[in-house]
Length: 241
Image (cartoon, rainbow, N blue to C red):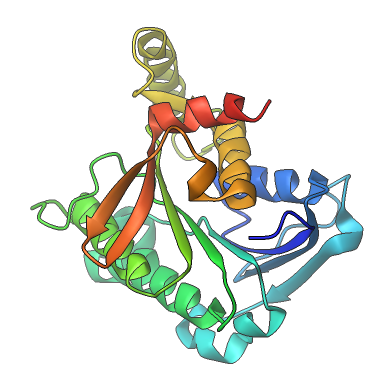
């Protein structure tokens, strides 16, 4: 892809990771236009930099084809959508939101021009053969995205997310974060701060998989993608300093 300023679409910008990523995109001179499409949108009182290049649109993921995602001709599509079975209300609802919404949105944003797709899987153990709902669904999502035919598909599988604000589980997050922080000093595969992760995601979107030294190839023959695990995301954040 060209090194000239590009355009970026972000889906899931109101989430923990997405909100940090949106700030990075708005502050980056590499992206001249940023589209935030979603069920909910970021308050314009939040961002302090780059608001002039932000385009926002409320969309219905149940009818995403009517949202006009591809009309923006986005060079890079970032997807940070995600939920849990508890938040969704049932296993079926979880799979619809966490997998079908993601794949359908990526398909709806694809054009005939070269594009890069970046997805934050947030599942170190994503596996289509898993007997557990969450990693199996994530694995199926990854395979579904790789089959869409984007020129460059990059998927992040970070570990425990540090620096999050989850008011429904304050004590659990605090304790888990403290334990993860200690373990992270021993292994880089344990956790990552969401601000660092957002920086890595932006760098991957900007530079593409060919420039990533800390990544591996995954997926099926003919439907491969570039995989960045927790240690790779940490290294990537420092790669282009």
